[in-house]
Length: 509
Image (tube, rainbow, N blue to C red; front, side):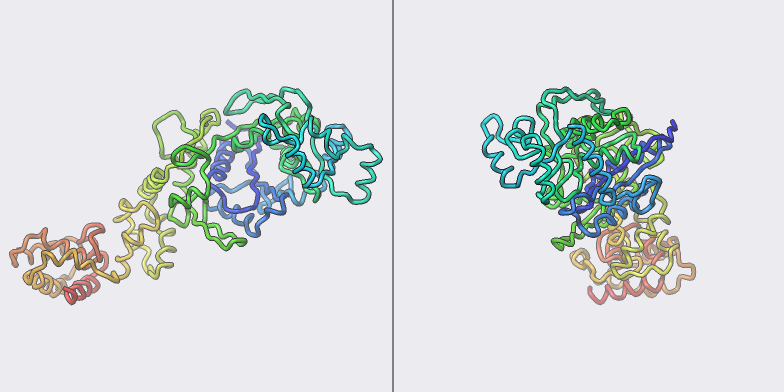
């Protein structure tokens, strides 16, 4: 299906690390856009300057690039509906806030923080423990609904701080069709007069999201279900501004839940349980804290995208492994679940393991090489690295596992697990390896077949069972009781290195 008019957006605030729930929202937007031949837009919602964190916008863009979810339009890419930062569209929001005042759909409010606190205390009851600024309380406050027009003008003229609030009707049913949940209705009785324009002249999310979605011709808006309570305010804004016919189709995505299913997954949960919740490492310049991300822990972007896709969606089959092209083909919003999806870190690692096994080793080599270099191993021959990865990839769950499972191919182990050898170590075995090291020097064609044949031949001569010799040989070459076939290891590291490692091990035994 192709509809080039489809325009979707991801609109994060540059306030910190990109949560996996945010990346899933990006993914669903991206899949929907690509499936319909439309456009995916990145818009930065940076109107709350008190929460702005330097570097956060660049971090978001880097995360999307790593995931392979590049926007068609963004602050970085540009586009026909620029600017793509809300802070650069400030005058536009004020224009529409004043239009709403002129229409009688919004009003100036001059209440101080102290007056707002006093209101909450005065109207607090057992039935209403958290009073809000609404059709009842607005009549007790200092605003254009209670003050004479000339007083309102005077307060504005002398620079009295004010906000602009939407005037919510007292008893109106507001309904929309959610692409996931079907018909959803609200009564305005339960909705408060949200601030639209703050005292610093910046819009709140409520005004900005409506103005921007209209201005950028957004056709579908996908966001987390925590934004459902804001829907009636947004519906009224679309209506009051005369744009209701252009309001996007909405889909409120299910939450990603803690592993036990109780509550939304947070960074604190990840810290407590030992798994990441951010796409990539996030360094917070305010606290100097470094939070580890999926990328740095050794996840492939293919696996990360795959695991997020099925956190709340499936195509109706038993299939679990999806490439991005398959997801674009099969994704549909009507198969997104209404209920939250529990995050399972062990399952996330399973996805990564499956993708490691599936992807070609030359592709993996580009990603593994950087980790090897960071840990002091220089890979001089890419062909050897690819061969090594072919041997060990089935044993690796994370990209970082390749160092432990294969670092010894390129650098002799710093320590040997001699404790694994000593209980059954004998002088005959010492003599076996001493003789073997001399015989190995005579092999002309260094390969698995020649090494294994010589090893067996020497074991027969010394009357020692083959099974009693392979573990010591492995520890000598690898450092421990792990790794692929021991003769494959010897063939790969080369004659001189194999002999050197045997001789070094004998000095310890």
